[in-house]
Every structure is written in C-alpha cells, then in structure tokens.
Length: 369
Image (cartoon, rainbow, N blue to C red; front, side):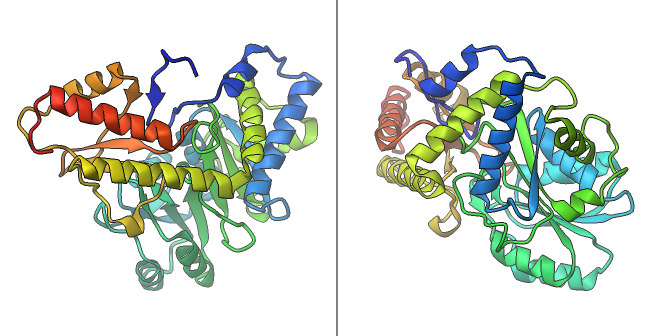
C-alpha cells in the first residue's frame, strides 16, 4: 500500500492489497472464455467457504450488496409469501424496507441495538403466526457490530418448516457458516467485505430446490436470480454486462484468502485486530457500545467523547489527515463513531490508528480521556 493512501477502517469499501488492485489493470471481454473461467472459479471457491457445493448454487449479481439482498427477497419469496424480519439495527430496517417496496407481506420484530434476537423470540413469533413463510436475519449488524445467534435461529426456523434468508454481508468469509449444518434458502454477501475484494458484485448462495421453484417470482428482470443462474448454467456467461474488473479482483483476493489459511486465519487476524483496537481505545477512556460477548470482530462502535469540544466532522478530518478513515455512528439515540477491523490490515495498523486517535483528541483538547 502506498504510504500516501489512507487506511480504510470501515466495513467496506476497505483497504485492499497491492495484488488485488493490480488484478484490475487488465481489461476483459465479457464473453471471453478466460473471463467465464474466472467467474466459474470465483463461484466454486465461494461455495467451498460455506461447504455448500452439494446443496446451494452461487449466483453472482452486478451491484452492491443491497442489490443482492433485494434480488434474494424478490426471487425467493413468492408474491403471496410473508417475511418475518428480525431487526436490531439499520440494515435490518433496510431489509424491511425492501420487503415493503417489493410488495411482499412482512412483519418486523425489533430489539434494542445492543440486544441480539434470540432463538426463543423466533420460536414464539413463528408459533404465534403460522402464516410466515420466510424469516430474514442480519447475521452481523454493521450499524453496531452486534452478532446475532444464527445457528440457533436457523434450527428453530427449520423446525417450524419455514425458510431462512441470511444477510451475511459483514460476516461471510470471516465467521463460520456451514451450509451442511445451518439450514437456509439464501445467504447473501458481497465482494468488498471480509474477502477483501473491491465493491461492485454481490452474490447469493441459493438453495438448489428453492431456486428451482422460484421461476416467475421476481419483480425485476435484472434482479431475477433464477434467470441469472439459468443463463449462466447454460452459457457460462453473465446475462448483462458483468463487473469484469471486480470479478478479476475478487478472484485474486480469494487466492490470497486461501494462501493466508482460509476462514480460520482470516477470523484470527480480524479477532486480533479487534482486540488490539478495544484494548487501545479503552486505554484512552473510549468505551465500546457493545459487551464483548456479542461483539463481532468486524466493526466496533464507540461512544463519542462527552467533551463539548468534540465534533465528529473535525475529529474525522484530523484522523484522516494522519492516514486513517473511520466511520460515523449509525445509532439514533447515542452519539457514536465506528472503526472497522477488516481489510488488508493487521495489529500494527490498528495500533497506529489508536495512536492517531489519541493525538487528534489531544489536539482537539478533548479532556475526558
């Protein structure tokens, strides 16, 4: 990484390796055999991460992760279906809004932003309303960093004979999800998160039987995962112009992912980053929003300093000038800011970021640290 480039301590886009950026220097023809082989290799490697080749298809889609979430809801939830949306942050709220815009019947269950949804909650809700056909869950809620208990919830959903849709945008590739152990109809992620690719491609792991039954469900031609998969299976090509450079970067990022040691190694590095961040910020007197038991090693929300001289915009610009880009808070009731633990960064980078924060707060004469 160039010494002039700021370190992106955000939940994506994030800092990528020189190799990943270099992979985007070549232009690809969208129908070229070499590019089609890249796409097939990417999908195969992604399925391996969840042990899902036997049970699921990997369907890539142009656009951000939210495009893929909308495509999954629109394709896999029939127009007479009903979704139970589990919410404890902004991305759960967005999922509910997608259901509303698509005209899918839904109900929400909301807990506090520092309170995971529990399997008992889901069991009660499905027992009380058997009309639900699907449950939609955010695995790691990026607005706070909270981790929801996916395996337990998945088992409850399966026992009730319902179908689970998982937004794993901020967890896939770093937190374990085994498709042979966790039943789901769809798991959704994207290129620019824990795999350390660049933004521009979402993908949906769709259960083979569910996808086969989904023809005609979708509200949109471009978002139709059934049609996308069918065309790719027949031709090896994307239906519409693919994000060629993004796919090439992701292919290179996956090579590095495997060289590092795969999911266990990626998780270990992010967990070490997270601990270094938490320890360093605690030494400055900055409190994390979540207790350790429900904090995923992806992004950490911190309470803002209480000093009247603290202003996030000033704080952000000063930290950026020292080489680090942070993230604003996304909570409605408490003033916070967020620091990502993911990307091409290690413990030394996290410590350097903490040192920069300390310097800036001294410059701002924020006294409560």
